[in-house]
Image (tube, rainbow over all chains, first blue to last red; front, side):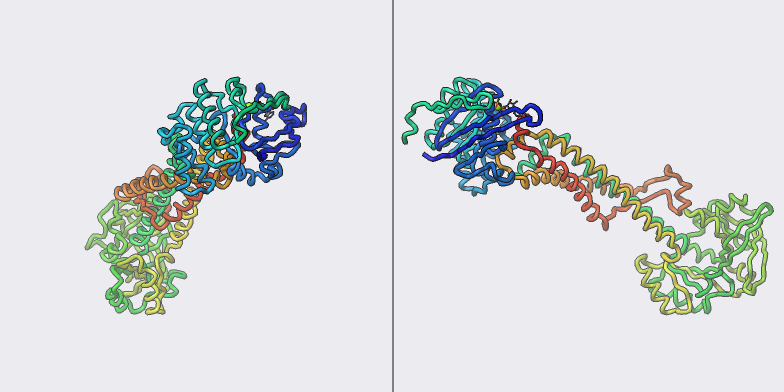
Amino acid sequence: MSTVIDAHNISKIYNKENIPVYAINNVHLHINQGEFTALVGPSGSGKTTLLNLIGGLDKPDEGKIEINGIDITAMSPNKLIDFRLRNIGFVFQSFNLIPVLTARENVEFIMQLQGINKTEREARIQTLFRQIGLEDKMDSRPSQLSGGQQQRVAVARALASKPQFVLADEPTANLDTASASNLLDIMALLNKEENITFIFSTHDARVIERARRVITLVDGRITSDTAKVDTHVQH
Amino acid sequence: MIFRIAWRNIWRNKIRSLVILLSVAIGLFAGIAVLALYKGMMNSRVRTVIYSETGHIQLHHKTFKNDYEARFVISNPEKLLQELRKNESVKQVATRTITQGMLATTTGSAGVQINGIDPAMENKVSGLLQKIRVGSGFEPGKKNQVLIGKKLADKMKLKPSSKLVLTFTDADGNIISAAFRVAAIYQSENTPMDERNVYVQQTELNPILNLGNGIHEIALILKQDTATHTVAKQLQQKYPDLLVEPWQNLSPETELMIDTVDITSYIIIGIILFALAFGIVNTMLMAILERTQEIGVMMALGMNRIRLFLLVFLETIFLTLIGTPIGLGIAWIVTSYYHRNGLNLESMGKEMMSNFGFSTLVYPEFPTEKLLGIMGIVLFTALASCIYPALKALRLRPIEALRK
Ligand SMILES: Nc1ncnc2c1ncn2[C@@H]1O[C@H](COP(=O)(O)OP(=O)(O)O)[C@@H](O)[C@H]1O
Ligand SMILES: [Mg+2]
């Protein structure tokens, strides 16, 4: 089982000049290929900050983060942009999709940025939309989709670039129970069938239930890290 | 896909896009309108110079214009006139006898240029008789008649059939005075000229000047304006003893004015473009501010700075490219309307316009030759002014953009 994310002693400190706030405080994190991990904790505990750090959107003040053995904390901003494009999938809490593009175009856009050719893009779009169950909504604009449908398209988009892992920051926060459960089903299925690594933050108990590993953050520290016994890891 | 995003972004906030689009259109229209107006004014000024003041070309004795001495006549005028009339390029010919002198009435006096003319010939070259406002012009049988300009008439309180005395020097250097009667008062578009020039019949002036059939000036109207310089050169070669001058030399102030007006028009266009730039900078900044989150998402997902810059740039290009034909269209319609019907600028001050020798009725002309130039600068301004908003977008940090 290969390591995807390796974070050593990372800290993120806000407000350094006055009263320093440790949004992330000396965290070690090790994520393997194929994990389905939930990051939980109360609001303000540092979930978003941690996801931003391992997603290369932000830099730690201390420590270093390696993705597949590559130190992203030492990368220049321009290199990081390209690194994100090729290695990391993102699902945000809201405002995920580009409103002027259709669902299909939102997904295709990323692949186009990656320089994937038309035939391959088309094939991948078909697969992804089948997986998220929105084949009939491909040509809808985000405004014509429900919140749950939008998040499913966001998952498809995150996967379009065949990333090393997908980071999802409270992906179900704005969804009703049914949509949230449906989104989790899709994510779990993709994890199971395609061995895609998901790390998602949440404070929704029903979502936490679905995770196979639960990391709890309190005040920027990891206070517990528990793995559930599961059959999936064996293959 | 960036093209597609840029294109669709245009239609998101129609009002805002309309503002930019119309700024470009109006900027272009205003720029062209200014140029068209100036071109019309200049062309009409040039036509006035040629067809009512100097003609295309004038010929003088080499030294006549130094001091306007009556003795420096054009030699062999009959032969010369015959040759000029036969010249393919020449349409009309007029001869003038000229002397500088003094006009006096019982109440005052003024310095004038006395032009001895052949009324029929003169009319064909400078349209003098059409400029008569009061009185009937030279009447056959009456002696010592003079045409004076309105400005001079007002100043000297002269009316048709008023008496005046002209004093000047004859060919032998004697000072001569002769009494004349105002036959008519004329008015051209050039007030200073009206004030200076009085016209008498050549057949009467020549004996007084003791000149016989001598003349000082030949004015030519050509068949084509564009031939002026070539014909002037040819004539100069053919008649090396004469001074041959095109209208540009005869009316250097018109040349100067054309240059000045060019500069003025560029200043006005500069101001218009500044307003355009200001509008675009503001609207694009607003657009970017509104889309902070979206831009944050795109950057987070891996859209690099070059592509983001391109996105903002393309939006402006699209709007400019739509605005350009609209502006051109409006400019074309408006200019051709006024080109046909004339634009009355009397409200700008008839007095002022005619003091500078301008007609108040202007026929604007579409400045075809400057079109590419002005389109170029409008496009350049539009694109240059989206650079700042684009840089602003580039400076957004995705995590901050997403947090909002
Ligand atoms: N840009 C920032 N400036 C200052 N403090 C921040 C900033 N971003 C986050 N924080 C602080 O860091 C802590 C963790 O925030 P966050 O990672 O958003 O928590 P969570 O996602 O778990 O709700 C909070 O105390 C928050 O106030
Ligand atoms: Mg958060």
